[in-house]
Length: 240
Image 1 (cartoon, one colour):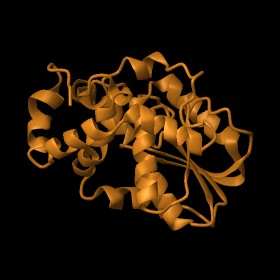
Image 2 (cartoon, rainbow, N blue to C red):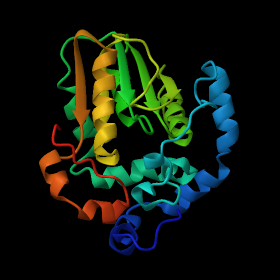
Image 3 (cartoon, rainbow, N blue to C red):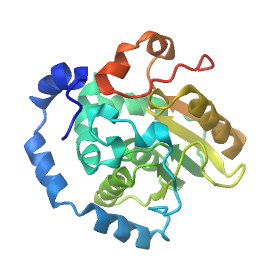
């Protein structure tokens, strides 16, 4: 896992968390995974929507070393290390934290969109909670989507994966009962955060829900040190 040597992540946090995670095993998985072949395989299975050849990555995404990983989420290593890292970054229990979001859902949504789905942790839980719903996970990283698809297949869950931007999905108006975003907004600049919110409500049917799981925004707005830890944009929108 290549990291920026000047970040607090590399100097302090990585050695601590690294002692708890078998990075050697993850590296072996990363090296044996043919990412390009997997992208093609998944694309063929879901109508070529997995990797959008016309997608232009925005600067805030392509130039950030998210989580201290060189190349950020456009690096296959990010997909293999994301789950183990968030396991310790979301105390007391990652699944418990994500379940808290799902427990707030009212009714039984028929179509669900999980924006910035990453490796699909929340997306899989949504499908498990609502097995009859059509569940779609959207993310900018093809590598994260490959990992999400791998996890869904292993869990025998039928989930659609889309390669695209949360702020401009290209999906139809009022086409979802539920739109979720887990651990997304702390990684997007304020203007992008607001664009994602506008897009979420554009996609929502009347009576539907938009649910967001992220850090305490009041605290995050004051936590400039977070940008030093993970070298990523911390949203400071006053409207969150």
